[in-house]
Length: 227
Image 1 (cartoon, rainbow, N blue to C red):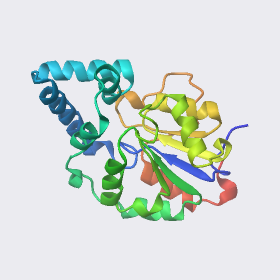
Image 2 (tube, rainbow, N blue to C red):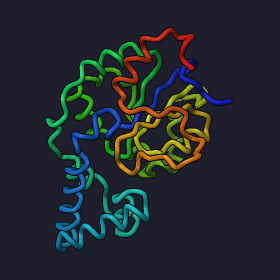
Image 3 (tube, rainbow, N blue to C red):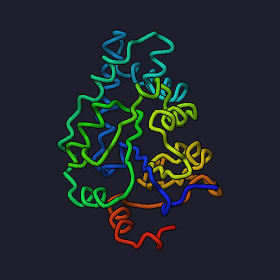
């Protein structure tokens, strides 16, 4: 048995490029600051830092995970530096605020970023009060999505029944463990390659283009009309 939108008691939302439009391009800022941090830490040129950054991302799931495993780097200085970005490029979203207020069930943010990063963004959007919890990379013991063990930690920490849970993401592969565990899955198409789902995959239940529009329409429907 799988969860459906109708029986959902928990809603798990990704953060970046999910709760705000990808056109804000916040990750570009983060990407640049990662490169700067690595260059300063190892006293290397930016081009070399970029190569190291991307190699660790490919091999370890996140750049930070690679830096920790290969070099024993402490995570806090890295997280603080790379997430010190300008969030004013995000416009507050009263429409999303209203939709989340009407959405029944507990709401959780699940991010490969930091707790502080999630708080800054949701405060800027004007939606922080709607989220019961933020499950960040530290809470996941630095095991990034789509590491299935981190999903188990999420479910255990907040006593979540996956058969009563919906997960919303912009990265297709991050929905595969969620679906395997029994959650209903929603993929946001952002135009980026990581939001594309391969032909024939069975781990994406719903495909949408805009979270705010979709949620606004969803909460206006009768509960017996949601499937």
